[in-house]
Amino acid sequence: MSDNIRLKILNTIEHLCTLCVEQMYRLPSSHPSLTINDQHYQWNDKIDGKARRDFTQFIYVLSTVHRLVRTQTRMNMRELFYTQVNLFRHQRVSDSIVEQLVRHLCVDRRQLGFVTTAKGFCAGNVQFRNLHSQELTDCTQLSHGQLIVDDDIEIIETEHLVTFILVVEKDTVFQHLLNDGFLTRYRGACLITGRGQPDHATRSFLLQLSQTYHDTPIYILTDCDIFGVLIACTYRMAFAEHHRNRLRWLGVWPEELLSLSSLHISQMLPITDEREHRMIERFIERTDVHQEWRRQVSFFVQHKRKMEIEAIYENGTKSLIDDYLHGKLMGHR
Image 1 (spheres, rainbow, N blue to C red):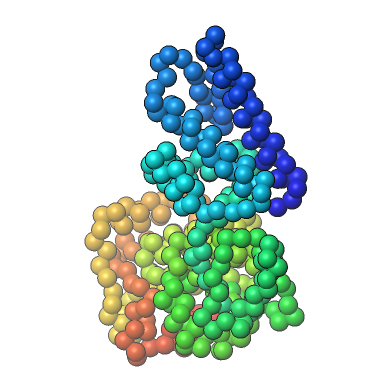
Image 2: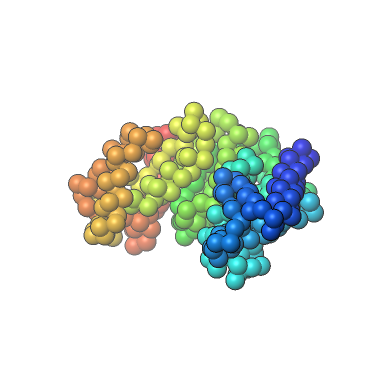
């Protein structure tokens, strides 16, 4: 983070706190008011406990951010909540205040000193340096992948170009591909998983990787259900609008359910949950996603079936790499 951004954050917080002190100093001769981040606080004899708590929560987060930015230290969002459990009561409260500050200051959470617990993994042809510790990580040397931490990193562009990036929804599939020799067969590939919905660190890592290797295709492999489609959308929305078409949803496509069932893959599951049906209907009506993606999701309405990626290979008769991925990768490259 640049010194200019640090000073901007510190000066803004100090200005807000100065306003607080000046307004409070007028008590009880007047009933001062204060507006912080569009939240209006009015001191009078009728102020209720909720308003007092809201104000105290906001000031506490401000003071924590000021300390983190000033000392250039970090804490994760869970730690912030546990420092004052009785004050916040629920983590969503402290999380919401941090997000308000992010929007108000036009910075990201890391610039305020907050990181998330590491969740995603990467493997394959990629190297990066941690800008704080200066530690260099070479993922080609790690057989089980590298944890993607929510920290400032720099992707190192090497002479060995990344041929393609494959993002998979689940850790089980990520580990299966590694164990089945995916990176031996596709030596220039990079493999990433967010282990479900990707966190900030995983999305940022993919975005920086795509900017370093700006001609490298990016593929996403998810379960064949509405939740997998939404995860693919989460990755896609991390990119600027004019770059979103670089991310190609490789499958498993809903229209493939019939052809896959003919390959004696029997683990098709019925869609019986009304919540899932509503999510499917809302997705089809969306205008901010690719038309082909909406068309694919419409097959859920027709077939009323879904499938997990593991169903392709778990009975031992089919290979995820040879019988499914290879043809798709060759067809897109």
